[in-house]
Length: 150
Image (tube, rainbow, N blue to C red; front, side, top):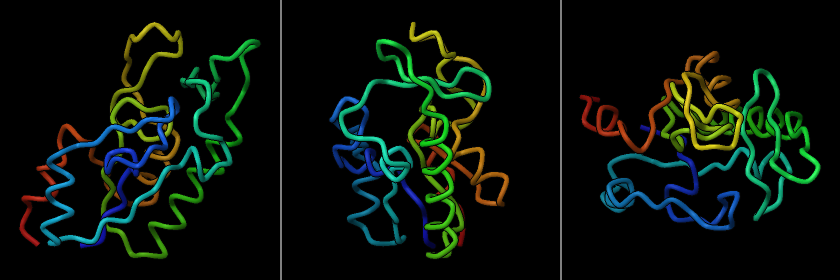
């Protein structure tokens, strides 16, 4: 099975802060070789640098917490479209994306106030992938995908 995966979950330093979010269970799954993982960072693919100011969704917009605040919605949309194109090109049947992210979050994202509060919602890339029939998981529930019978 080909699975799109947030590159930061594999330890690739593409997180807004310049770091990563390595997930040991996913790294073990990659090493086991039972699935093909296709790394993606929609924010980088959208043209944003690493590091970059943190961003959160505020309704349909994505705002970077810079001085002054900056609308980065277009970059997030470009990155989401690139992630979808990569998923389709490589025949991915699912995605494992970074929880709570304004691009990759699924089911819950930060509320746009930059205070750490979360609300129901999806990141820009996660929403686009789902609209195109690609189910999205995150580092908290990926075992549901990887343990499913093929």
